[in-house]
Image (cartoon, rainbow, N blue to C red; front, top):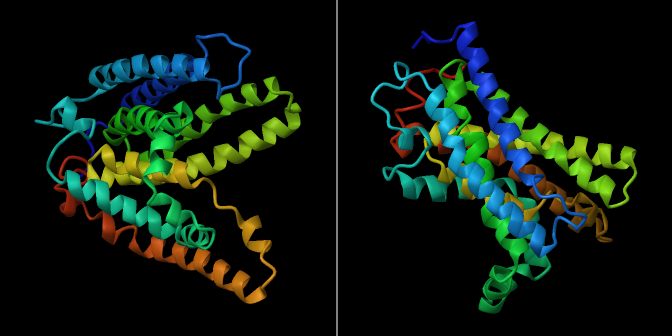
Length: 291
């Protein structure tokens, strides 16, 4: 289906809307001036309040920037990916797909005994009592997916094709993480080191952002990218240096193979496991065909 709103004014308004959302989100983190570390409880609590206000305000940008003719009959809640139909699939399937990608790291956790720790109630009770856990596993994934996917992507999809929108959207997400440059230099890190770290973080957050945007567009559910994001925050960036540290060459080869197998399997399963019909998604995907 050809877009009728994909002209320059529409695209410009979509980009500006995304820029406003990015500035609003990052700016909310720095309204509180404090010399304390980002992991300090008082800093975390203040930022929780800031992103809560941002989460409330972000849908207004979508509301005023949406073209009702393009999304005929769709409610604001549906555009934000908040609907009941297909919700179970939207939670389970993207999580399983993301776990396939982390096949190597998950196997390493099994070797290190972390799987046994996961079945211990005391592990989870200890985790939920810390503000850092709530930030990493709940508040950050929820607020970031809400702002950078649920509120941004519908603005872009009405002006760009899905592939273009999916790769534009995460650029705002990646650039937004450059605010860590300020925090790292405050900690005493040299500007060069902090810049290199921020560039690396920009790269992998942009790649993940494209994946999260893909999940949102294909499933039409906010919970799909949120679940994947929370899981990725739990796993962290894959540590290949730990694989190299193994003295047994056969074990190293096995682990590297699992990393590669996970990546290849994820690439092969990405499209079939996100079939929009599985999630009853007719809002975002029937209006376009993938370029």
